Length: 139
Image 1: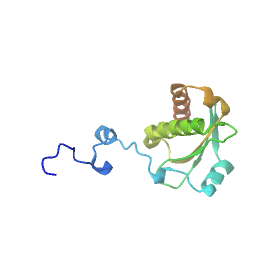
Image 2: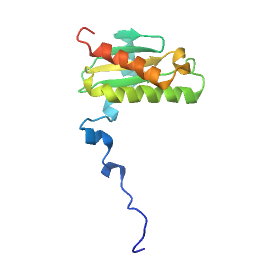
Image 3: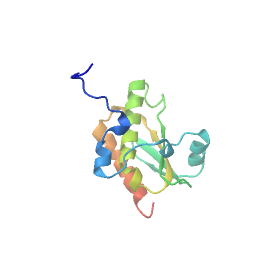
Image 4: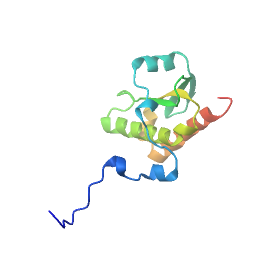
């Protein structure tokens, strides 16, 4: 159809994302994720732990080139899948914004039951304090 008023379809890779415009990579590539059960076991075996009423964050130095994230939100913690998904989204989003500023470590964030009832800004604030503690030189 010549002269169609439909807009040209632009592939996702061609779009100018806000992240690229700011000059910082705020993506969450597969290389920044803890996927294997062995990686999780290694973090649980030897790690630095930081906790509050909403989250327990465990960290262990890694040999990768970037900080990596693993998430554990159990059914015991959040019964409804909607709640588990919301908490996971918040954790991923918080990590994406600080990933390049964190020390090169493997991080596992474990949600606690209290996180289900809290607002998103409160959970972001909690995670921000965890990331700040791990960014400090004596952490």
